Length: 405
Ligand SMILES: Cc1ncc(COP(=O)(O)O)c(C=O)c1O
Image 1 (tube, rainbow, N blue to C red):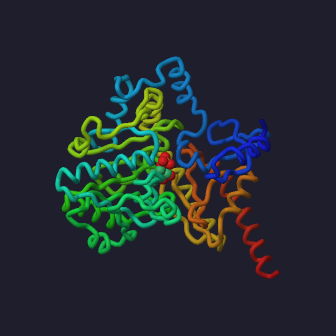
Image 2: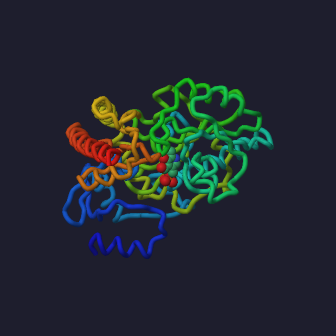
Image 3: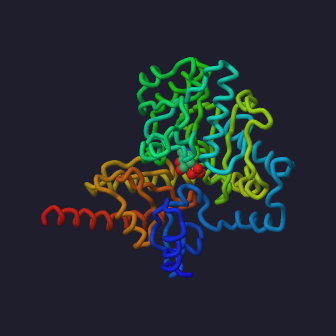
């Protein structure tokens, strides 16, 4: 079936939760996606942060091919060779002790909230409160939603679990006022992804960690979008020398397959006893093998250096564009998690860019967000910047014409 037929069938057969870009992806190679008409797209969307190694990475494909001759799933009632070594590596990278494997980011968040309450209750029966951040996004299940800030996501599904409060970004006195003996956890994204690539201040984060220590609450870093090399370090919190009790990862972990992990301090992890939490698919052999290969590549000496180098080149190019084009209000982010906030809505710009062969998306109505494969090269950045310049200049002249008309 071609694009038109697939789009028509989806229109009738899918639950209408997504708006898609108007093309049919049939192939991928490195930083490019190809459609059914043979057009190619330079991918700065990166599968929303999943495709850290781009598409069809030869080493990942080799693991996949080899795994296809072997066990795909055995259930968590049976040992297999890949879960423990993967847990070992994740724990070491995060400076933590134990790992629970889940499938999606949301599921990792949900599990971490349960862990925080299980651990909190061990200290005191009422210690169940969760402090989350304004402008946060943690996922779509009921618990993760309760910790997610935008009302448009939460409202239709209320009542959500109780005991959640939102803290104003970088407002230390608000944070202090909301801590109490009943606080079980503070949940943060060091860089808020869906919130528009907004960085929390080092001082605020350090104070949050300190308050958690004082109150016996857990400091949880949701690194689902900003972690695993995205910002040029294994985890975004490492840039500030933070030491969370629990770290959550997902998106790129298994090179495109669903896999998430809750990485926790040993004492905290032991609040879960056999039977208290689980999931059928979490940590299967195929995903874990893929993740082991991903971590091997991520830990090669030159890998993060490349992310930092291209990331800073990309940010500088965006900053130059900001000086040139009044429509760009602000450039934000770190490593290869970058954004340009515009003074106009960006939905149409995303569409026009796709037509011109460049993929990225729009968050918060006016923020262009870039989560390219971490293997992107300087020349790809140059191509994107050139295209963006043309599209933004034409959008601004169209707007001016609109104002004059
Ligand atoms: C910071 C953060 N947490 C949680 C999630 C939810 O992850 P998933 O969509 O895999 O359930 C996301 C998804 O974008 C995210 O960015």
